[in-house]
Image 1 (tube, rainbow, N blue to C red):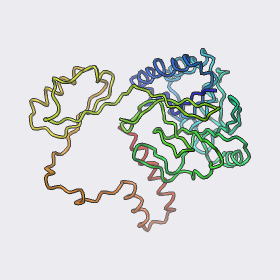
Image 2 (tube, helix red, strand yellow):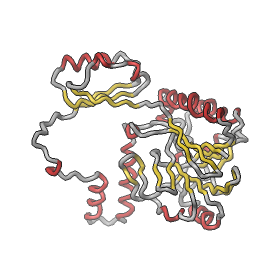
Image 3 (cartoon, rainbow, N blue to C red):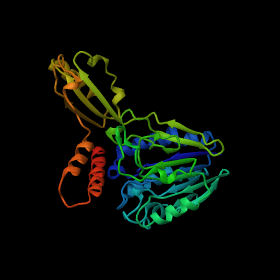
Image 4 (cartoon, rainbow, N blue to C red):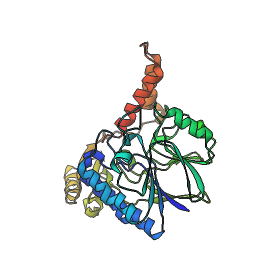
Amino acid sequence: MKIAIITDTHYNFKKANKNFHDYFAKFYDNIFFPYLKENNIKVAFHLGDAFDNRKGIDYWALKWAKENVYDKFKDLGITVYNIVGNHDTYYKNTNKVNAIDTLLEEYDNVIKVSTPKEFNVGGCDFLMMPWICADNQEEVFSSIENTKAMVALGHLELNDFPVFPGQMQPNGMNKKIFEKFDRVFTGHYHTRSNDGRIYYVGNPYQMFWNDVNDKRGFNIFDSETYNLEHIENPYTIFEKIYYNDNDNDYKDINVSDYEDKIVKVIVTKKTNQKKFDKFLDTISKSKYIDLKVTETIDVDDSNFQESDIDVENTMVVLEKYIEESDFELDKNIAKKIINDVYIEALSIE
């Protein structure tokens, strides 16, 4: 059986920002649901973080999610196994109050996974796990130990996988806990990665500047062959333009390229102000969502050698500081807090 896998959709994103939800809708209307209909896909797995805000839901965003996603699942006769992610749950130490159980009660085609459960779908046994927290950790580990399923699905925070491109997670759970499974498919980190057995399947669309040039979309899993196929989402919302007097000409600009986009012009070399003003003026004629200009320092690098400087990763510097400090705190806890704050900061525009 072919099964659609999607995760980290974050309805209600940025306090129900309409521009982002219009962008999300293009994916669902033109890519996701047409593919499921054309290929007669009747089962979908949602691996968590369907909704964005743990503390509440904007009424407009809830209506949007139902009309644009969950009603369409139901109309197409698709059964959805919806795992609870960390953004779906109200408390941090328990999943007992969560958006999936509370907001999707009316959908009898949505199987709500707020506790670890086993399901047989398409002749394949799956262990499905919600977000692991203090309240359910013992139950989840027991289910892992006792299950006969060879495929696990969850919303996991594991070590040594990229949270964003270029930023690895050093303080998550040890992936060896899941070594009994042939395949593990998980949400939580938005960028796609795998070690050959554990797969972070990636979210469907861009949400932050970190996502530029990082392929997004959804996946199709074959329960018989274990093959995982990625279906790319061609739509983007962020656009970076690197401006250099020698390379950029306002006459070459196609304003339609920036329609409904959040545009950032990064100036690397500007010696002709008039030429730059014409360039910006032309960009401004496009129907963009937002336009920002960032100027960098024009450095004479004729005598520059890469060995002249030694740049350390931000987290390396912070962790080194914690290790060398004398404060009376658990340094592992301090590192975890700093890492979480750093990762959250990377998500901010």
